[in-house]
Image 1 (cartoon, rainbow, N blue to C red):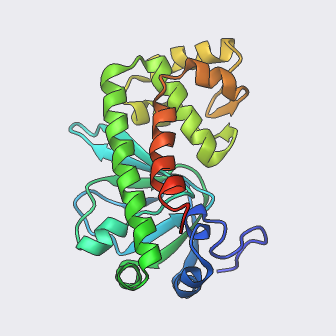
Image 2: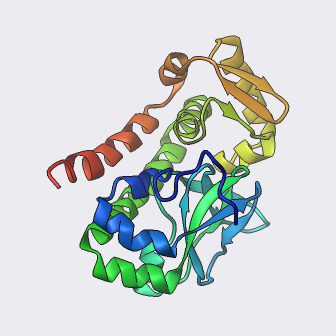
Amino acid sequence: MNIPADIEVARDSEFLSGLGAEARKLIQPHLNLVSLEAGAVVARPYSKIEKAYFPVSTTFVVDIELKNDASFTTGLIGSDGLLGAGMALDDRVSLYSVSALSIGYAYSIAVQTLKELLLTVPEFRKRALAYEQYFLAQVQQTAACSALHELSGRLSSWLLRLQELAGDELSLTQSDISRMLGVRRTSITECALELQRDGAIDYRRGEISILSKRKLVKASCGCHAEVGDHFSRLFEESFEDD
């Protein structure tokens, strides 16, 4: 496909740009830049994936599906990560439903090719396994947050994470947010309007603008910071001497 002018191959993925030049040189020929629509499903529960993905300008929402067509978001994958490394190495099925939160680009790669690269490029494997560990920590933090924290604080933490991955302007409906947090839409409305009154966000139909990160941090439950600490320990500290 034609690559947009503002996309530089294998560098607009934060995950890939964190690799050394030699590793990127080995990986880059196997990448295919794809455009994804909002809601595009890239993995289904209990099914094997044929392609793995490195998000560039979209964010993946990872949901666990419950009974009665309900679902609950356990984590987010942005440009700092990848989808499919663990499944490629272990030849296992996906346990989650994974979809694109918004329209945007991602690099895709065949799962078998990804497996071969992970097995033959040690730097790539180390970084991919670190991200798998980070994502597990994110899932565990989400579970603890859901059990222990008030909705207003949880919503603020999710918005902070989404701001990091997608910027200040978020295209999110009440249904999107209620699915992520596993609560009723009316509860989301109440909390969002409270944040708007405090000047943290501007909340409109299907759109949220982040106006004050400082106020969101103050309103959050603290889990966003904990997730950030997990990432720092696994990447900034583990790879600083590489």
